[in-house]
Length: 253
Image (cartoon, rainbow, N blue to C red; front, side, top):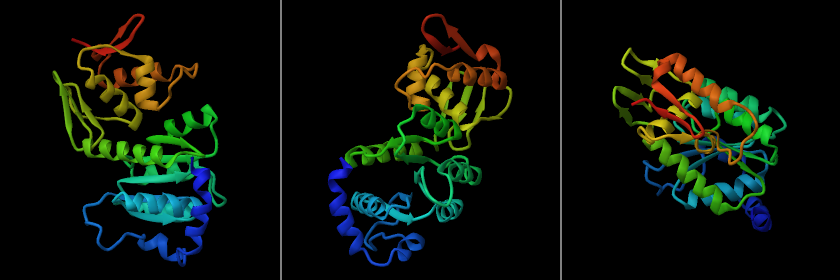
Protein backbone atom coordinates (compact mmCIF):
# COMPACT_ATOMS: atom_id res chain seq x y z
CA UNK A 1 0.00 0.00 0.00
CA UNK A 2 1.06 3.55 -0.49
CA UNK A 3 1.58 4.08 3.26
CA UNK A 4 4.56 1.73 3.04
CA UNK A 5 6.13 3.95 0.45
CA UNK A 6 5.48 7.22 2.25
CA UNK A 7 8.95 7.35 3.82
CA UNK A 8 10.56 6.99 0.41
CA UNK A 9 8.12 9.55 -0.95
CA UNK A 10 9.08 12.07 1.70
CA UNK A 11 12.76 11.52 0.88
CA UNK A 12 11.93 12.03 -2.80
CA UNK A 13 10.14 15.27 -2.01
CA UNK A 14 13.17 16.61 -0.11
CA UNK A 15 15.45 16.11 -3.11
CA UNK A 16 12.97 16.97 -5.83
CA UNK A 17 14.00 20.59 -6.19
CA UNK A 18 11.78 23.65 -6.13
CA UNK A 19 8.15 22.60 -6.29
CA UNK A 20 7.08 25.72 -8.10
CA UNK A 21 9.06 24.51 -11.10
CA UNK A 22 6.96 21.37 -11.46
CA UNK A 23 3.46 22.71 -11.94
CA UNK A 24 3.83 24.86 -15.02
CA UNK A 25 6.33 22.90 -17.08
CA UNK A 26 5.89 19.40 -15.67
CA UNK A 27 8.80 17.14 -14.88
CA UNK A 28 8.93 15.07 -18.05
CA UNK A 29 12.27 13.66 -19.06
CA UNK A 30 13.34 15.37 -22.31
CA UNK A 31 13.88 11.92 -23.78
CA UNK A 32 10.14 11.15 -23.40
CA UNK A 33 8.55 10.81 -26.85
CA UNK A 34 6.23 13.71 -27.70
CA UNK A 35 3.36 11.26 -28.26
CA UNK A 36 3.38 10.11 -24.65
CA UNK A 37 0.03 10.70 -22.91
CA UNK A 38 -0.09 13.85 -20.81
CA UNK A 39 -1.39 13.61 -17.26
CA UNK A 40 -2.19 16.44 -14.86
CA UNK A 41 -1.86 15.52 -11.17
CA UNK A 42 -3.63 17.92 -8.79
CA UNK A 43 -2.75 17.22 -5.15
CA UNK A 44 -1.64 19.49 -2.32
CA UNK A 45 0.34 16.77 -0.51
CA UNK A 46 3.97 16.86 -1.79
CA UNK A 47 4.72 13.31 -0.63
CA UNK A 48 1.78 11.94 -2.62
CA UNK A 49 2.29 13.99 -5.78
CA UNK A 50 6.05 13.38 -5.71
CA UNK A 51 5.74 9.64 -5.37
CA UNK A 52 2.83 9.18 -7.77
CA UNK A 53 4.20 11.64 -10.32
CA UNK A 54 7.55 9.90 -10.52
CA UNK A 55 5.92 6.51 -10.86
CA UNK A 56 3.74 7.69 -13.74
CA UNK A 57 6.69 9.38 -15.38
CA UNK A 58 8.67 6.16 -15.06
CA UNK A 59 5.77 4.37 -16.77
CA UNK A 60 6.26 6.62 -19.81
CA UNK A 61 3.75 9.40 -19.22
CA UNK A 62 4.32 13.14 -19.28
CA UNK A 63 3.23 14.53 -15.92
CA UNK A 64 2.40 18.07 -14.83
CA UNK A 65 1.76 18.72 -11.13
CA UNK A 66 -0.44 21.38 -9.56
CA UNK A 67 -0.22 21.69 -5.79
CA UNK A 68 -3.52 23.53 -5.36
CA UNK A 69 -6.97 23.29 -6.91
CA UNK A 70 -6.99 26.76 -8.50
CA UNK A 71 -3.76 26.06 -10.38
CA UNK A 72 -5.10 22.64 -11.37
CA UNK A 73 -8.29 24.10 -12.82
CA UNK A 74 -6.26 26.71 -14.71
CA UNK A 75 -3.92 24.13 -16.21
CA UNK A 76 -6.77 21.74 -17.07
CA UNK A 77 -8.70 24.57 -18.74
CA UNK A 78 -5.76 25.02 -21.07
CA UNK A 79 -6.50 21.57 -22.49
CA UNK A 80 -4.21 18.95 -23.90
CA UNK A 81 -4.36 16.46 -21.03
CA UNK A 82 -5.33 12.86 -21.64
CA UNK A 83 -6.15 12.42 -17.95
CA UNK A 84 -6.52 14.60 -14.85
CA UNK A 85 -5.90 12.97 -11.45
CA UNK A 86 -7.64 15.17 -8.89
CA UNK A 87 -7.40 15.12 -5.11
CA UNK A 88 -10.83 15.67 -3.60
CA UNK A 89 -9.81 17.52 -0.43
CA UNK A 90 -7.68 20.64 -0.87
CA UNK A 91 -7.53 23.81 1.23
CA UNK A 92 -8.23 26.38 -1.49
CA UNK A 93 -11.21 24.77 -3.24
CA UNK A 94 -13.44 21.77 -2.73
CA UNK A 95 -12.48 19.02 -5.15
CA UNK A 96 -16.04 18.70 -6.39
CA UNK A 97 -16.09 22.37 -7.34
CA UNK A 98 -12.75 21.91 -9.10
CA UNK A 99 -14.12 18.86 -10.94
CA UNK A 100 -17.16 20.82 -12.10
CA UNK A 101 -14.98 23.70 -13.30
CA UNK A 102 -12.69 21.37 -15.25
CA UNK A 103 -15.61 19.65 -16.96
CA UNK A 104 -17.27 22.97 -17.80
CA UNK A 105 -14.13 23.90 -19.71
CA UNK A 106 -13.75 20.45 -21.31
CA UNK A 107 -16.85 18.23 -20.95
CA UNK A 108 -15.05 15.19 -22.40
CA UNK A 109 -12.05 15.49 -20.05
CA UNK A 110 -11.26 12.21 -18.30
CA UNK A 111 -10.87 12.77 -14.53
CA UNK A 112 -9.79 10.25 -11.89
CA UNK A 113 -10.62 11.30 -8.33
CA UNK A 114 -8.31 10.55 -5.41
CA UNK A 115 -9.95 10.82 -2.00
CA UNK A 116 -9.55 9.87 1.64
CA UNK A 117 -13.32 9.41 1.75
CA UNK A 118 -14.75 5.95 1.12
CA UNK A 119 -18.30 7.23 1.65
CA UNK A 120 -20.47 5.75 -1.15
CA UNK A 121 -22.54 8.95 -1.39
CA UNK A 122 -19.40 11.01 -2.06
CA UNK A 123 -18.28 8.56 -4.73
CA UNK A 124 -21.70 8.61 -6.41
CA UNK A 125 -21.76 12.41 -6.32
CA UNK A 126 -18.36 12.68 -8.03
CA UNK A 127 -19.27 10.13 -10.69
CA UNK A 128 -22.57 11.89 -11.30
CA UNK A 129 -20.69 15.16 -11.72
CA UNK A 130 -18.70 13.50 -14.50
CA UNK A 131 -15.60 11.93 -12.94
CA UNK A 132 -14.53 8.84 -14.85
CA UNK A 133 -13.07 6.97 -11.87
CA UNK A 134 -12.69 7.22 -8.10
CA UNK A 135 -9.85 5.76 -6.05
CA UNK A 136 -9.75 5.85 -2.25
CA UNK A 137 -6.61 6.66 -0.26
CA UNK A 138 -4.61 4.72 0.81
CA UNK A 139 -4.17 2.93 -2.51
CA UNK A 140 -1.64 0.64 -4.11
CA UNK A 141 0.53 2.14 -6.81
CA UNK A 142 -0.17 -0.91 -8.98
CA UNK A 143 -3.90 -0.27 -8.84
CA UNK A 144 -3.49 3.42 -9.62
CA UNK A 145 -1.33 2.77 -12.68
CA UNK A 146 -3.73 0.05 -13.85
CA UNK A 147 -6.63 2.49 -13.61
CA UNK A 148 -4.61 5.12 -15.47
CA UNK A 149 -3.98 2.62 -18.28
CA UNK A 150 -7.70 1.76 -18.39
CA UNK A 151 -8.76 5.39 -18.59
CA UNK A 152 -6.23 6.11 -21.33
CA UNK A 153 -7.46 3.12 -23.33
CA UNK A 154 -10.97 4.53 -23.10
CA UNK A 155 -9.70 7.90 -24.30
CA UNK A 156 -8.25 6.23 -27.39
CA UNK A 157 -11.61 4.61 -28.07
CA UNK A 158 -13.47 7.92 -27.80
CA UNK A 159 -12.43 8.81 -31.35
CA UNK A 160 -14.43 5.88 -32.66
CA UNK A 161 -17.97 5.91 -34.02
CA UNK A 162 -19.98 2.91 -32.89
CA UNK A 163 -23.00 1.63 -34.81
CA UNK A 164 -25.74 -0.89 -34.05
CA UNK A 165 -28.43 -0.98 -36.73
CA UNK A 166 -29.43 2.62 -37.46
CA UNK A 167 -28.09 3.83 -34.12
CA UNK A 168 -24.69 5.54 -34.19
CA UNK A 169 -22.65 6.92 -31.32
CA UNK A 170 -19.86 9.42 -31.91
CA UNK A 171 -17.60 8.88 -28.91
CA UNK A 172 -15.44 11.91 -29.61
CA UNK A 173 -18.33 14.39 -29.77
CA UNK A 174 -20.67 12.68 -27.27
CA UNK A 175 -23.39 12.64 -29.91
CA UNK A 176 -25.88 9.89 -30.80
CA UNK A 177 -28.16 9.48 -33.82
CA UNK A 178 -31.02 6.99 -33.87
CA UNK A 179 -32.04 7.97 -37.39
CA UNK A 180 -33.66 11.34 -36.76
CA UNK A 181 -30.55 13.48 -36.47
CA UNK A 182 -27.64 13.95 -34.04
CA UNK A 183 -28.46 14.47 -30.36
CA UNK A 184 -26.00 15.69 -27.73
CA UNK A 185 -25.59 13.43 -24.70
CA UNK A 186 -24.31 14.03 -21.21
CA UNK A 187 -21.28 12.04 -20.14
CA UNK A 188 -23.35 9.54 -18.14
CA UNK A 189 -25.89 9.14 -20.96
CA UNK A 190 -23.05 8.48 -23.37
CA UNK A 191 -21.46 5.87 -21.09
CA UNK A 192 -24.80 4.14 -20.50
CA UNK A 193 -25.65 4.00 -24.20
CA UNK A 194 -22.16 2.80 -25.06
CA UNK A 195 -22.49 -0.03 -22.54
CA UNK A 196 -25.76 -1.09 -24.17
CA UNK A 197 -24.26 -0.88 -27.66
CA UNK A 198 -21.24 -2.95 -26.65
CA UNK A 199 -23.68 -5.79 -25.87
CA UNK A 200 -25.39 -5.52 -29.25
CA UNK A 201 -28.94 -6.80 -28.86
CA UNK A 202 -28.19 -8.73 -25.65
CA UNK A 203 -29.60 -7.55 -22.34
CA UNK A 204 -27.46 -5.71 -19.81
CA UNK A 205 -28.25 -6.00 -16.11
CA UNK A 206 -28.55 -2.98 -13.85
CA UNK A 207 -25.57 -4.21 -11.83
CA UNK A 208 -23.46 -4.34 -15.01
CA UNK A 209 -24.49 -0.79 -15.89
CA UNK A 210 -23.76 0.42 -12.37
CA UNK A 211 -20.27 -1.09 -12.58
CA UNK A 212 -19.36 0.10 -16.08
CA UNK A 213 -20.98 3.56 -15.99
CA UNK A 214 -20.86 4.64 -12.35
CA UNK A 215 -18.04 2.41 -11.10
CA UNK A 216 -20.28 1.04 -8.35
CA UNK A 217 -19.96 -2.62 -7.43
CA UNK A 218 -23.12 -2.63 -5.31
CA UNK A 219 -26.71 -1.42 -5.54
CA UNK A 220 -26.80 2.05 -3.91
CA UNK A 221 -30.53 1.71 -3.38
CA UNK A 222 -31.37 4.47 -5.87
CA UNK A 223 -32.86 4.55 -9.35
CA UNK A 224 -29.91 6.22 -11.10
CA UNK A 225 -29.88 3.62 -13.89
CA UNK A 226 -33.61 3.99 -14.55
CA UNK A 227 -33.32 7.77 -14.63
CA UNK A 228 -30.48 7.62 -17.16
CA UNK A 229 -32.42 5.19 -19.36
CA UNK A 230 -35.49 7.49 -19.26
CA UNK A 231 -33.35 10.40 -20.42
CA UNK A 232 -31.92 8.38 -23.30
CA UNK A 233 -35.41 7.32 -24.36
CA UNK A 234 -36.61 10.93 -24.23
CA UNK A 235 -33.75 12.04 -26.45
CA UNK A 236 -33.54 9.12 -28.88
CA UNK A 237 -37.02 7.57 -28.89
CA UNK A 238 -38.80 5.44 -26.33
CA UNK A 239 -38.70 2.34 -28.54
CA UNK A 240 -34.91 2.38 -28.78
CA UNK A 241 -34.26 0.71 -25.41
CA UNK A 242 -36.34 -2.21 -24.20
CA UNK A 243 -36.87 -3.21 -20.58
CA UNK A 244 -36.14 -6.89 -20.00
CA UNK A 245 -38.13 -7.91 -16.94
CA UNK A 246 -36.00 -9.47 -14.24
CA UNK A 247 -32.80 -8.69 -16.13
CA UNK A 248 -32.23 -5.11 -17.19
CA UNK A 249 -32.21 -3.34 -20.54
CA UNK A 250 -31.26 -3.95 -24.16
CA UNK A 251 -31.35 -2.19 -27.48
CA UNK A 252 -34.52 -2.92 -29.42
CA UNK A 253 -34.27 -5.40 -32.28
